[in-house]
Image (cartoon, rainbow, N blue to C red; front, side, top):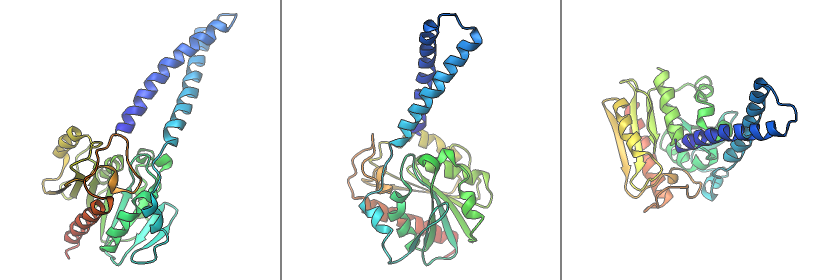
Length: 273
């Protein structure tokens, strides 16, 4: 969610700068423009600066590492298939599926190592490609998956900002049975019938802890929380270090192994196995 706050701050600065630019342009015009023309000048300047700033902000993103790329050519275990909405990771399970919203500005492929482990554990996974790598731009992306596949148990999940959107989707759709939050939280109440698993690392310096604690009032009464000793924010995916994050005391593979185990155990209870 820090990305959203940064964008809001940038927008505030943009509008301030637009009026400054508008004033400069106005002074260079020999004939004094009307108030309406002045507003148009300022608005045009604001839009131009905002679009340029947004393009630069969104162009800087986290690319998948070697482990993530290697999953695409790994023919063992769960099958990874590119789809119109992202990726399907099809394992041996047939009853439960997890629809995953990546974190802000993180490439979809970065989460394939974790998703493959979850699918190998019996929960098929669908990782969404998001516009400009931002879940807030496609909050209903899970619709494409749910409308094309049939499972007994549906789980929405996400990392960081993606988790916020995954929880919101579950709060608005009664056909979602559970939510899995990875270093994330919910901003609105989840139905009591919705099972919840929350996973985060002790060394995570990106997750807003106060917001997380506050969001627990929206959790269903019976939820599961797994805190990974030594885990940080970025290692749920494979995209390198993340700005502002803490240094992990365990490897990314270990953090993902623990996470996958927690998710598959959580899902097995949902399907009664």
